[in-house]
Length: 236
Image (cartoon, rainbow, N blue to C red; front, side):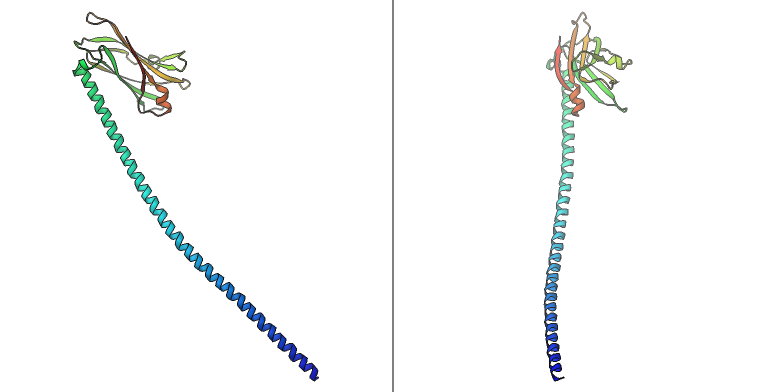
């Protein structure tokens, strides 16, 4: 019986020692995990603060960029307005120089300008042709204008009078004349150039005159040009 008690006490002591060591190991692991959790919490807090700072900085940069972009747009519009005003002023100056100072301009009939702009309906275009006479001792000119639309191979030309029968191609003036109208090109037509030909009849004061100008329609349509570019001028 005594031997049994001693064995029981030994077993009890060993069990208590094991329990104690198990408890200490568990507590040690718990302390390690708690330390890791605290470290991770600090890291999360630090990253959150850094992310907040970066977000604020990004918002500030985006606001500055938007502001600079807006300023750039405003400046670009102002610059375009100034350029348009300068072009208009130069055009007016050139126009009136030819009217009041014929010695500065070319002799005979001249195609001063040919402008095209979109109409209200899709595919409809409005045009304005300005004819001018720039010579000393002007006399009244009368004749006709022909506007043709040509494809790349120039095998077939479409006449403006075929597109707009109401267009009056006749002109009669001493100084200048505006001719206006509209046209709608066939959808299947692949137009690249516009030919504008003005022919004045001969009279007792002047011989018959003819002037032809060619404009780049393809570039005007495809590249979104602001105005028709004159490709060539031929007069006789």
